[in-house]
Image: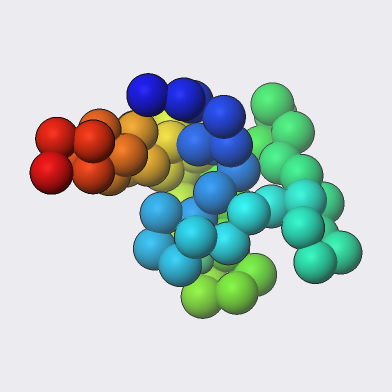
Length: 60
Ligand SMILES: [Zn+2]
């Protein structure tokens, strides 16, 4: 699967950091809160969720 934006995308609401006037997450940002749905994310866990969701979508 394409790992593009998996770090920057909220797995809950699909908001992409760096859009709509927000700042992209930096490598130093280990945790962040989605400005749209206010879900608190641990970066690597959120990226893993996105990869899992995309991978399952390909199998469907
Ligand atoms: Zn969100």
